[in-house]
Image 1 (cartoon, rainbow, N blue to C red):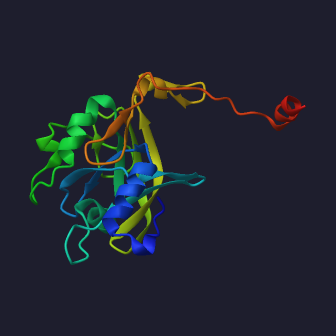
Image 2 (image 1 turned 180 degrees about the horizontal axis):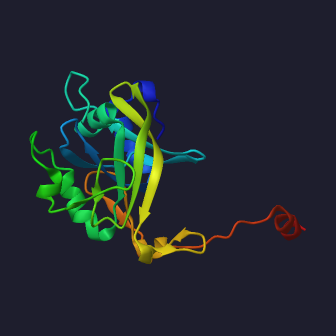
Length: 212
């Protein structure tokens, strides 16, 4: 089948995109309001975009309804300019899912998920203590497009638990970190445990030789 976006419904477009743009990394974002209250919420419309400077992008849809009301994460980042992306691994999956619950205002997702905060090294927003890796970010800019906000964050510090880091690179031991990814539909995820495969890049000279 073929779908013309102008003739498709928003739900159809959403269903198709999340099914095809997958697997997606998950950013469990901690942010803080102007009163120091910490919020935690997962986002899978997320990836790194460049490394010099190091920029990550997060898509945050507005709250459902007729008005353009940002989610707590987007609002906090706009007001304080800081946030932390905590890497979601297998052992944090269930707690990440609790943080996705639409709790009433004033309820701490960290408390509900039994997660503890730990001080970040550069930004005021704390990271999640049990997260094995985290990116401390400052807002570079936020683009408001339709009913979504695209948040570009500049990474100002990176935390990786020692046992998941090869100092020779330094390289992240991703095959041991066991991050999870988001697939299509609510509740659909993929593991990386025992799923790595290696496909070496082919130098042009070698490719020419193979072609004869």
